[in-house]
Length: 309
Image (cartoon, rainbow, N blue to C red):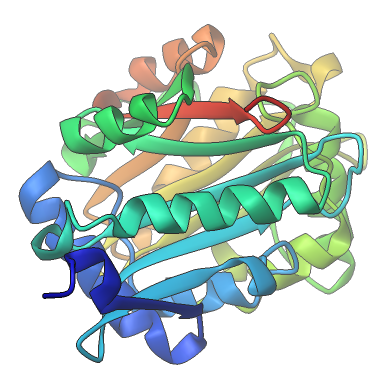
């Protein structure tokens, strides 16, 4: 009799697999606990991202059904930052069959063959099986990211007056501005990688892109802050990126921009607000708590040095 490992096959991930991959994501939540929500549309959009590793992302099929997937994202804009970042999920019904290990090893082999230095992934704190898998593979815990959440009725706005003026995304030139603002406001953050215009132009193709809720804060005619936002089909407003240039910090600009973003999303139907923030970013954590956000879900980030073993 064939072993369970011999009953599955590996092939390249395709756009038409996204419904099945989304079902794996949903099935994993039912067993492992909650994680960040996604949609098939978001997953398909991710495949069109210029950083998506089309030749290094795979699915596992068993009895003609997709039961696991591994997606890789490659840093294309900064060769010195040599890394793969991947998402690996196996449907709960098909775990303990060796599928996860085969996909892990396949990704690691590709990472090494391309000369990348490290392999990074994550597991939610609610997923004991995911954490155990990563630790067993030799990955080491690096840092956590918090999903913070706030029902709109818990919003506590700050001062409404500021020297800055707020405008929304207006034309194609603002794609380059988003990339520049990212590079100028997040260069000191954990895991920073340089953004290029190709990255930000991809945002405009996303299923929930709305230029009216992508905001810039300007002072003396110069953009000093940016807040990129989206609203999910479940009316959850997401603060995707909030950044303020170093020279404008400490002026209340971050809070002013955050409040205007929240108000604009609520006006457009958001019934709750969420965001992700690194656990070591104490300033941002304090800012978000002061407006009514509370930590809801911990995402634990792991790394593996590809030069070892």
